[in-house]
Amino acid sequence: MTPSARVTMPDYTDDASSESQPLLDSDDSEIEETCSVLHSTQWERHVEPSLATVQPQAFETATLFRQRFIRQILGLNPFRTSYFTLYRQLDDTSSKAILALAIIFAVLAGLPLPLIGVILGRIINNFPPNADELRHLLYRLMSVAVGYFLVTWGWSVCWAVTGERVSRKTRERLLHRALGMDMAYYDTVAPDLSSILTEKTQTIQLGTSEKVGLFIASISYFISAFTVGFLLNAKLTGVM
Image (spheres, rainbow, N blue to C red):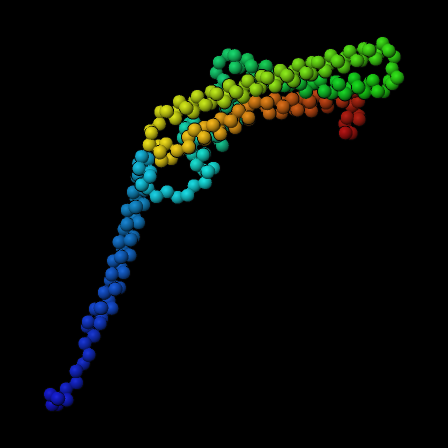
């Protein structure tokens, strides 16, 4: 074969190397990204609370944040704790005495209502009644009404004072615990500390004041009404 007739073969080495180079670069970039993700995950696990602003945080709802905040500040989980533990704040004698009077007055407040119904029923059933009998029944009715007013006023005042004292003691305890924490915590996790404390203590006050007395008085009224009904007419009360 003559030199002029020699056929030159195309050189594919440069093309192959140029095509394989992006694949190698992509593999290296994927490995680097995987390593960076692993390093960031390990760093997130061992990060200090004071560096929480640097760490990327996921979105949290207000409920989860407040649960964690109350659990960390108050030292207990309010969603797993009994309701009656709120009254542990009443550690002095006067507060315990007021709480006892509030419970007693609330129980007594449910008793006069069935008696008022019985007295009015006797007045209506014996109409027109005798003058002396009517005067006697009216005296009874006025006495029961005055007693009902006194016990209702008593449990309202006592439960209002109890709720205020529970709220104040809880606020003092929260403030005492909050002052003992690191200042960086309030800059990174709980910047609205005052608003959260105000909201929670107001909720505690509403849940430990007059509503509790009204609930106890309603239960007492329910029990006393059925008791009086069974004493006067057991068959009719049983049917009802």
